[in-house]
Each structure stands twice: as structure tokens, then as C-alpha cells.
Image 1 (tube, helix red, strand yellow):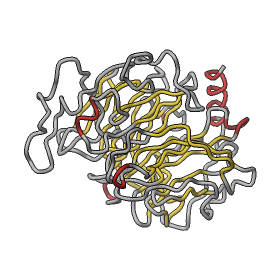
Image 2 (cartoon, helix red, strand yellow):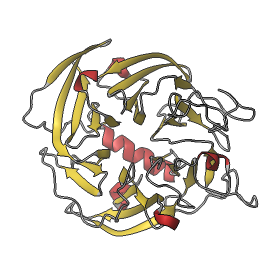
Image 3 (cartoon, helix red, strand yellow):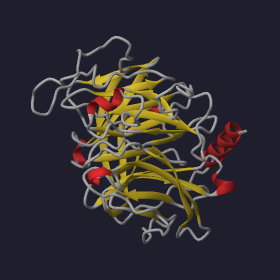
Length: 383
């Protein structure tokens, strides 16, 4: 039932064809391997935006700002005041208000899910939390916000929260969790650092999760050995979950996520410490019992949000994967050969802006967020 409802919601949103208007700014024409690009600012003046989600029926786009605001970009292109009902966040370092997704049954339940950094840990530390609230009919507040998940223990002093949220075809919620910059915890199955967890939409643990019933193991865990997965998306053709992860100095990677698997960190990595010395726990680029990445960058672009393209508007982009890059300030386009990356193209380097998130809109365009003091939301397409 969850699967059917989710598919109906997705199909309903894809029939929309009207895009949001742009702000009064010059549309840029850039070049790509597929031909000229059209890049149009939709809204500007965002305070370090982190994620976006499209409301149905052209009601606008929800955008999170890391300091703790949830904003609405209206169908008229105007930016709303911060919405009410948003939880207090721990806005330090990489922490703050992070991902936003709609319930698969949003048209019926109006639930909006948020991930964020939450304080209260021993010694002033923080961890990732996820909650949900009902979006009011006037689009001004989240009602009855309830926390459904908390990372335990809370170990972060400001780093590696992960925080991407993905619903699969059957309506299960996946949450990516960084290891809080505490490397060994990614291999500790009694902790939720460096894990991807799988839950029911209300936060309950499914009985068929891989480690349910094992003593000393967190039942929420779906996979482990992750460093800081700041991008995740469901492959629309296969229904499989993919993530991308920051390596240390070098070794950013893309993974196909499978039930109960160990993705290696910090036992296996292509990177080194920022100081230039090897990762102490690393056994090499591979390690026994771990799953290797589907693609790896020896020099880290600093990858973040990601989106598979399955729209009809731009045929040349079909079956491509787009990933935002923070350090290299680009949008990365990947073409696949089966489940392996066959070709890579770097886009939007002319902007010289950190690209935090990318999503496919219901109109078939890509929408890109830049993580800046005065961040922007752009609409991107082929001419």
C-alpha cells in the first residue's frame, strides 16, 4: 500500500509542467557536452541553504537554511518569512537545519520531514535528529512537530552529520548518518555513527532490518562503515538506494547501498588525513569483508546533494546522475555503464559557488542550491 501511494504521488507531481518564475536577474548561457545550458536564478538571499523539496500543485518549493529556518519559495518566485513550528537546531560547524523531504502520502497527510543537528550530548556534543510536522494549509507553519529518530550517542563537536533522507518505493525511510568525525564508530554496531538506518515513516524499526534481534547491535542499522554521506537518492529505474560520501583528503565516493553491508570506513579508503599522514585504521584502498565504491575521486570535489535524472524534457540527460560539489564549486554530471560510472562532466564552474543540493523539478528542469552567505536557487536546463 505504501508503495502504491508513493508511486501515485510521484506520478502526480511529474505531470506538472509550469516552472517557477525567475528573479529579475540575467539568465546565463553556458556550454556543456550536450549543448548550450540555460541557467536562471529563481531566488537569492538565502542563508546557507541546504536542501529543497517541491510541493505539489505549484504551491512552491520548501528550502532549508542551515542556521535553522525553513522557507517557502512561492509560485510567484517570492521568498517567504521563516515558517513556524520548526525545531530548534544546533547551528555550529556543519550542524544546523539540513534535509527536507515530503511524506510519500503528502497530499493526504501533509507531513514534512526534517533532519537537523540536535544538541544535548555530554560535553556539549550533538547528533543528527529527524522529525516531522504537518504543513498548514496557509503554508506558514509546521504543526505538531514530532521527533521520530535521534542518533545515539551524540558525539559531534560540529562535524559529519550526514542527514540525507530518502523514501524508497515501499515507503521505508532511509537516513544517512555521519560518524561525527569519530572514525572507529563507523564500525561499531552498538552506535549509530557512520550508518544508514531504515525505519517506518513514524520511526518504528522494521522487523526485517538486517541486525534486528542481535545482542549489542542497533536494530535501526541497514548498512555501516560510512564516513559522511551528504548525498543520497533512489535510482528511479532499479529502485536501489545510492549515496555519496566525503572522503578525508581524497577519496570521495559513490556507493550502491545494500542490506547489511560494510562500506569500509575507516578500514578502507582512498584518502589520507588532512595533515598528510595515513588514516591510522586504514588497511588500504580495500579491506576484507567490505564493499568498494562504484566510483571514487582521488582528489575530493567535496560532494553533497545528488539526483538521478529521469525527466522527459531533456532526453540527453536521461539516466544521468547529478551531484553538487562544495570544494570544487561545480555540478558533476555522471553517465553510467550498468552500475558503473562511464563518463564524467563538470558543469557550472563559472559560478564559483559551493553547490549544496540538486533536485529534479516537476517541470523536468534541475534546481540547484548554492551554499553561500547569500545563497541562490537556480533553474538549469538545456537550450
